[in-house]
Image 1 (cartoon, rainbow, N blue to C red):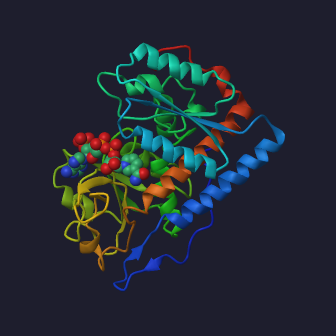
Image 2 (tube, rainbow, N blue to C red):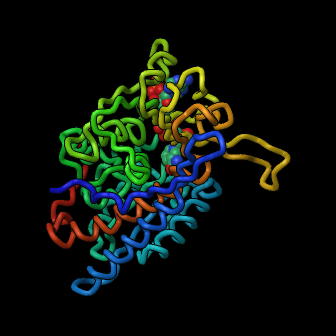
Length: 325
Ligand SMILES: NC(=O)c1ccc[n+]([C@@H]2O[C@H](COP(=O)([O-])OP(=O)(O)OC[C@H]3O[C@@H](n4cnc5c(N)ncnc54)[C@H](OP(=O)(O)O)[C@@H]3O)[C@@H](O)[C@H]2O)c1
């Protein structure tokens, strides 16, 4: 099976701040990705079944998930994808959660499923999401998708990992042969980001170092990066004292900090101290407005891909009949 599709046309006009540090906005790339997904969906719809349908499952009323699901619904509509949201009660059992996932996996009208995480209590996210056939796991977080990515045979790659790679390519920075430092090793963000950039081929072929909370002398490791991709969630982690001059900084981290001066009472922050890096880094992705919008657009691309794969290969017929792998 082929890897994820290539990114749209690169942008040659990323804004240059007065200091010379490029600001890699994600919105124009996200617009291109939506347009491309919409036309993919339109062309499949001509030959095939009904429109693709993305099913989002969350556990726990009253949490942030209702908001996420509303946002996902809007973005799906933008990509021409139908959307359904299920909110399970906080005290749902693992058995009932898995029954819901299985039911969606075998529903012929559903092409992709997202299970919101983290799950409350002792619910096992990986076990539940790994019940999905790889093509329908549009978040790319099940065991099969992670294993296939590691084996250089990706099916669905987590959208957040694609977003970092897509931003680099969009702004004309090919990872090929470059020293990339990925900070963070979660199986949903840091590890897939590192694995994607290690894939053979012109969109990968990077030399990747993965750092984490137990890494000794993180600052020295960071300074080796021509590209630094930070997937931590710790504001101020990256500054000019630990980033090589001219390095490209992709800031995946997202933290909410109380800020009474804002109408919302909070502000979103990345891992990079953008003000400190201004005039030092070669480029930086802003938070918000950098990796975030591209991630959601890439997720919709994965839904179109699920739809194509299910039509082509009848991947659904390989739906698992129970148990995590
Ligand atoms: N922009 C987007 O669209 C998007 C999408 C998804 C996630 N995110 C954001 O990305 C960030 C990471 O998400 P996640 O789910 O991977 O979080 P996570 O599961 O908490 O993983 C954080 C990683 O950072 C490492 N870490 C923690 N403190 C560190 C330190 N001081 N120095 C070096 N490494 C450190 C941890 O190391 P250990 O493994 O040793 O604990 C861990 O590997 C979060 O801020 C999240 O909100 C953004």
